[in-house]
Structure formats: structure tokens, C-alpha cells
Length: 211
Image 1: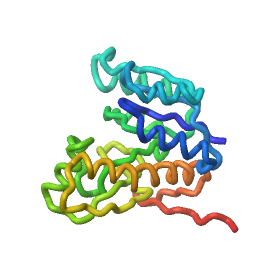
Image 2: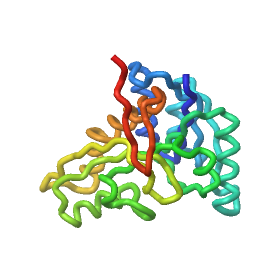
Image 3: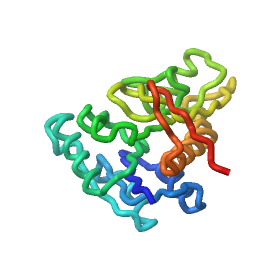
Image 4: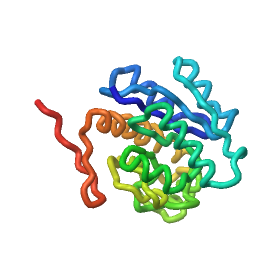
């Protein structure tokens, strides 16, 4: 059974999707053992506590720079014996120290079809605002491994969502979460915990389940 540590910064809707999937038995060979928040008042912490999941706070404001904060996060991850780290609305970019220590063991969900609308500065409603501004007909979500490039790691899963003529950034955000993010993030987590993901030359291959 693999230990899953989830990093959060806000409300924790993606964390809730993971918890719900685990409760339904959809995450095979994995268990959420700890939730670490960058903010002490993140509602995601309450979600975790409700299900008896251990919580920790590593307040970004208490550290002078990204390097010091990244070192602190890495210590907590290692202390928790994390096999997999999941970014679930975690709004801080960690430095290469963490990425190198946890290569292909950290995953993030991004609310667009990478390589569209991604990279530094593209988060939250901004992603959906840009999608609408460009007039794309399809958007969606991507689950990818985290590497040193923001939103640049190997892609694990993607799911498309149709953009409607009367969409606002808020309605599009909600639909992308419900139809894509909350479905493919738990799926990717389970695939990792089942040892069904391999990375070669920056590309992820999903190993077929043995019959």
C-alpha cells in the first residue's frame, strides 16, 4: 500500500475528489496518509480532518524564499514516507530540490489541455479566462508529473470538455472540474499506486492491467 501525501493551499475540491474516490475503492494500492497545507486557514485541512487524515501546515509566509520553503516541504514529505505527492490546488512552485528528490513521484492537475494555457501565471480562473478569450471550442484538464518546468512534466492523462457559447470563466471552471479534473486525478493516482505508469524520454506509458 503506497502512502499518498496531498499538498493543498485552498478549499480542497480536488482533495475531496481524491477522498471520495478512495472511499469508493477506486484508488487501488494507495492511501491518503497526510495533507500538507501552505496556509493555516485552508478549508482543505477541515476536509482531511473530517476523514481522520493527518494534517500538517507549512506556512509559506514563515520562510524567506522558495529554496528554504522547498527544503521544509521536502523534509515533511520524507518524514511522512510519501510514495506519491499530489498537488491539489497547491499554489506554490517548489524548486528543483524537491523535484529531483521525488522525480516522477509528484503529480499535478492543470485545468487545461497542456500545452495550451499553461506555465507560470496560468492558474485558477486565469486559465479559463484565456481559453474563452481565444475562443477555443474544447478545453479540459491534464494530469502530469511535476518537473522543473511549470506545467511541463510528462503528461499522464487528459480529458476534453466542450466550451459553450454562453460560458463565463466561472461556469467553465466548474464544468472542467466536474467533468475532467475530478475524474482523471483519482484515476492517475490509482495508476501510479498500481505501478502501471512508466516514463521514457519524457513520455508516459500506461501499462495494461493483467487479466
